[in-house]
Image 1 (tube, helix red, strand yellow):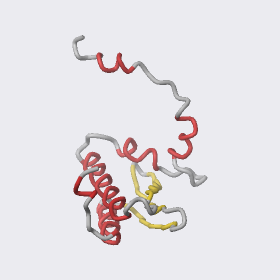
Image 2: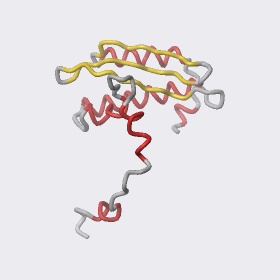
Image 3: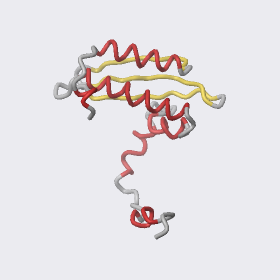
Image 4: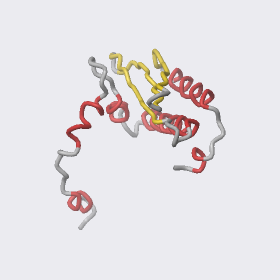
Length: 136
């Protein structure tokens, strides 16, 4: 974790305001926050329009007693900001960035749907991937 985020003194409310403003600038059509104090989870939900479709995304971050909520919110801001910059620069498609957090009609994210089968996925030929295209 970067020293910037690890040592932040920025209040959670300011990080949330900055995330909300960033998403508004990116033309999101709705942003909401929800806290589950018992579970130690903060949740960010937002809607955005892309290719004439409205998508919903949800991020859950752990802010239990063992983790400073200020740090978790600051890291989320940094991640969202970097991701949106990558999309704006044409480095990656918006779908590639937000796919795991897009919400299905049943309320689960793609990540939540796929996580149970993740451990059973086959591992590819990593050695082959590392040597392809480098003249070896």
